[in-house]
Length: 59
Image (tube, rainbow, N blue to C red; front, side, top):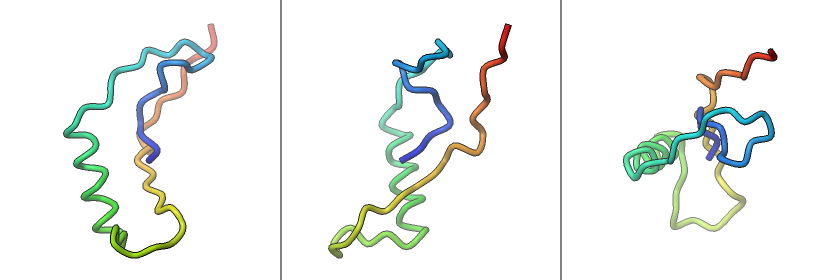
């Protein structure tokens, strides 16, 4: 799952916040609404919630 939050080890030192259980639950709901069937085998189902990602400004 891609999120709108930078990873703690990002190379641009953007502030990172932890992913909370509610964020995971929202991602699962989005995947189910998008057609993910966890009981069916197949390739990984991708959920992209990064639309709000803000790139760090260069100083």
